Image (cartoon, rainbow, N blue to C red; front, side):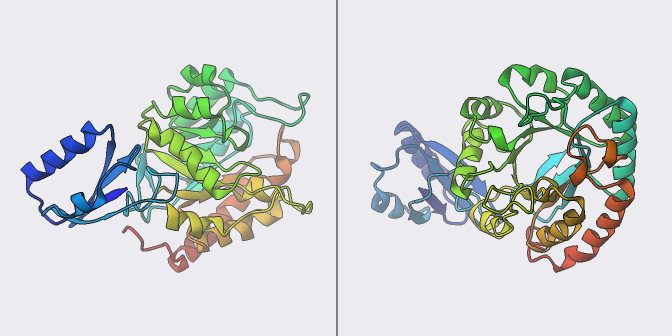
Length: 339
């Protein structure tokens, strides 16, 4: 349920209304714009008398929210959420590109790529330290040592770092990580999501391989219900009958999610296609569709990468892509939103 207040409501009446609602066991999510204040009620609102509230002098209107996700719902929070990651803002018209190798392989490798992608215009550095792999015999990442290498790359380049967590027990290692990524396979690891909800750190949540958009938003809701509203949604392709590409990139998810939620939405064309030659056109299409950013895999030597070299761009290819993204941004239908 949402309660839209009239402009400049009487503070005493507002306090009485707030106390009454909290006395019913409801949480209140506040959203304040230039001239409108919205009270989003979270909890069991079935017993709330809408007519009684709507009759109050300070109330403009009352509406029930049908969608199961509340905190992530744009009706609760009409303005786009802007997340500041060490000075790199995303959402509300702020566009960011996260770039780097699939896996951290050495200090020299990750630091070199970090400097290259920053020079090309990337705002954040990605790199896998813990790697979930289909085969138990594939490279699993350097784990804690990989995070140390990412921290060295952050020091060398000045870029905030993004890396994936696989287990709650690993979270102490992520103290100096700027954005914690939840991979597709963990999108419905609800215990992990609840723990991340207690943290004051941005979370990049990837859509599961076979999950609906409502399920995706409900996973974001798990994090936000715990108090952490710094969630970035990432569309990375879904599994379909098509085998020509690694996954099928659902670009319709971008405008749909932008309509349903105030959270930033980015796209990962690298994992979606699995083919380096397809990354550029899909990245440009995602930009045109209104994405708030991109996540691109970049490797200094893709042919010898320990994981996912086939979908990785070389630094010079990434630099060329960034020029094309910059050129197409003014034509994105989301370009001026929030600015």
